[in-house]
Image (cartoon, rainbow, N blue to C red; front, side, top):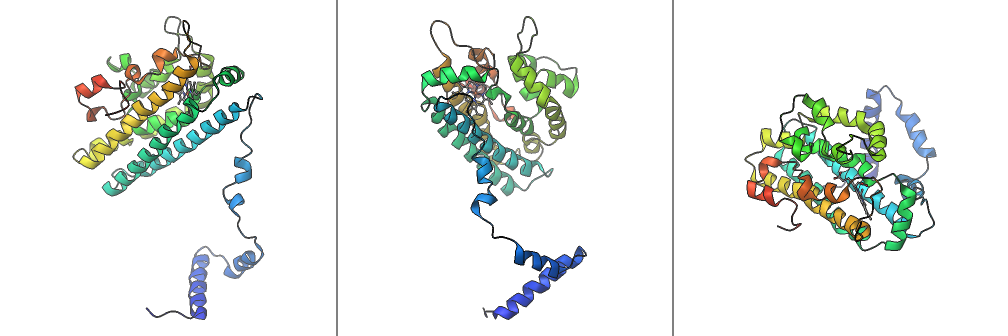
Amino acid sequence: MEQKKPGERYNEIVAKLEKKYEVMGQDLSSYLDGLLYSDYLTYWDYIHLDTLLSLQNPKTSFPDEKVFIVYHQISELYFKLIIWEIEQITAEEKPNADFFQDRLKRIIRYFEQLVSSFAIMVDGLDKDQFLKFRMALLPSSGFQSAQYRYIELMSTDLINLVSAEDRATKNEGGAVGLMEKLYWRKGATELASGVKTLTLKHFEEKYMRSFSDLAVRFQSRNLNKIYTQNFKDHPQITELLRAFDRLANVVWPLSHLKSAGKYLRKDPDDIRATGGTNWQKYLPPRLQRIFFFPELWSDAEKAEWGTSDRG
Ligand code: HEM
């Protein structure tokens, strides 16, 4: 191909720029003046590095509390990437199959990183320090991760997020009724008295409205709906969704549970969780039995759900 002379290239670019700014009724030469005076972009400004590195502020002087904070922040950033991919998939009623697969592969990759890095919590904290600094964090808990709930609400129908016992009974109350019975609300409520933990109360006060709005928006276009309406016969998409379901609802919960087991299990009495749930009953995926894509699992597979992180 014939190489263009520099003058020709500039003229071409200037002509294109003129067109671009003309459409908006703007004068290109003023913008070129701006370019002349503006500073070069730096790496640290671009990614807001100083702000990012100013966000790790322990409540105690135990060194490992910083590890705990940073790792939660890393997890939230991965959650953000997962939400971003789901948003792109669900932006259209029927996404292109290749696009769908490609984004699902990304989601799986992010989840795999979350799972493999969980050793930072399970093996990478000093237990004595953890058991002390956690007392300064009451009553906060990872339970209050709104992004974790967004991933759930964007992935599946509300009924699949209702507590296992309520899922089997008839729901009369529509979406509002189902929101009342979300498994995590039930898990943080004392069954006999109906009293909610303080952790749950704070969480609901801050986020419940945004959860309800999201649930309404996504009931007709969550990943499960998009799959069942368009891709039921697509073997690769089916396999990818199964992998995502296992990672989100068995493998990650089991690696997370290992950390609770390591730090909070103490014979004869287990240690109370900062969020106040009965974590031994609440956290195990075999008891929680959440499936984003229940139709993709056989009865035998469902019966085994959460009993192993392999297979
Ligand atoms: C030493 C590390 C950790 C321990 C001991 C731990 C412990 C717990 C416990 C006991 C609960 C139950 C709720 C409660 O009563 O507080 C919980 C819930 C939760 N934690 Fe953690 N956690 C740890 C690290 C993390 C990390 C790094 C994340 C990442 C964001 C996280 C996210 C969550 C989420 C999303 C829930 C709710 C799970 C659900 O509703 O199924 N946790 N955690």
